[in-house]
Image (cartoon, rainbow, N blue to C red):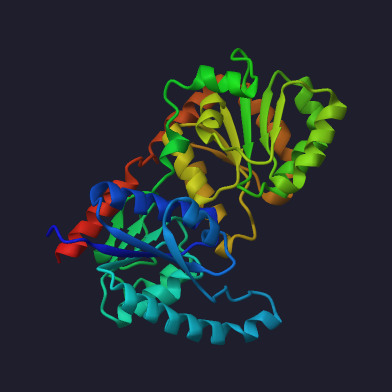
Length: 369
């Protein structure tokens, strides 16, 4: 590579599952190329418009949203939003003059990548899930390189341009070595009894929360301790339920800032089956029970979880069955040390902790071409 300053646009977002990988790629680019100029392109009104500037990067917003799968008046605006966003994306690219455009999926990724292809700018997309999103499926034949988190993706992507790299992770979330004692103290937990971590994403997971609430007395009678991340909307209800049960071994919080401590303390994790959650759990090597979000696009969370279940690396409970099955399954597994150890060993094979560096390797190869 020459020493001239390289310029990159990273586009996508909508959820943390797209935003966190995008920021991780940007951080890796900065480590490798300290003088690199990096600009994000997101969707107006989506969480990337707040999270990306918090991470120290500039962002432009496109007027774009997804096509509603149900009958909706919002779909009448979709063609106009798409045309406008394509035009706006072209203006951004012509002004910024990137050497390469990176797409991570989400609403803004489509118009930005399509504009880059039209302008003959090199392109790379990163797919987080085992079942690709529609944006990346549509772009696959047009972009230069596709970085995936799972193998056997040639059903959707051209094999000759697909590279298995893994998902770029939040480094501060998965650095758990040597932190267990401090983590237990942070959450007020006893190291001699099992600790279960409940996470439902940044907004919580209502089916998981209600399943916990319905059988909290059963949890309280067990020898298990609980770190329960409820999301903002269920925090008050959870605190009231725990208070009524007089259960002292439950830590309730709307959001966990110290995920490294949460992972370090936990013996078992109950989670949705988003790609980033799975990738983090593989790196920190935790036994897991997944409750896939059924409304996720193309039910990709079920596909994600099924891969691990088939490898003996996790258990899966359907969203509709969570109320009846989650707590009994969780108690049985948390108290089964041998099975937890087997699952920890099995999930470790899915770990790709240096995915961000692997993606930057592919970016450098593409720049040289």
